[in-house]
Image (cartoon, rainbow over the protein chains, first blue to last red):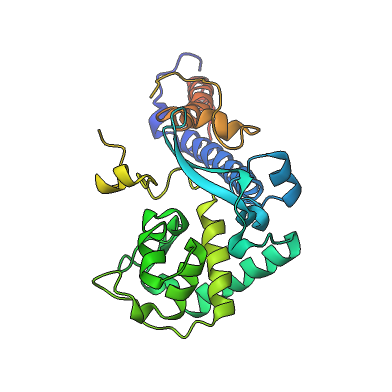
Length: 222
Length: 57
């Protein structure tokens, strides 16, 4: 019977078809997003780094470059700026193989010493101790820590601190001595420098490098 | 901040559609919801037609 008055809202068929469409679309979208994310978080290569091709996670050899952190007007957030000038760790440039091995050891050390128990790394971990995501860029390591540890460079100061953190009163909640060896400490520095070069879409929010901004709370609030 | 739906992509990787759509406030959300909701109008009217013609599920 044509023109019959009927409510679609009470039709089981309507809800079944709508649910099938929404669920089906969401499933396909999530599968697509999964593969898209895999591509986005793939670590870059040394060649891409040399050619200046930006990746969210650069190759381990990024530790041979100077890493800066600047506010990107267009993106509206702070992003790492890699190179072009070099700044090798401990005065020696690492090959792709060496850098990858050091980064791996640094990651394993950070896991075995359970840094995340107190610190936050890339959004995961505790809030007891400072966030380590951009620790390499922390202005404290520019002058204060080399002076405190009696070392000349940032990386040497980091190694000295990591090996005997209980000697240096950096924080009201002092870091305990975790028995980190020199080799592990050097690898951790590579790990931390590499982590600071990862484009985290501005996380931690408002982290900034310059002393002036650091003194005003490390934000871009004017 | 801009409120344009489509802008030149400034993200790290611009070779995928999500980077382009995720640039303004809520733009990706609005696009995805629109894509999901629009075919539901078609489902609604086709069901209505079916019911008016007296067809059963």
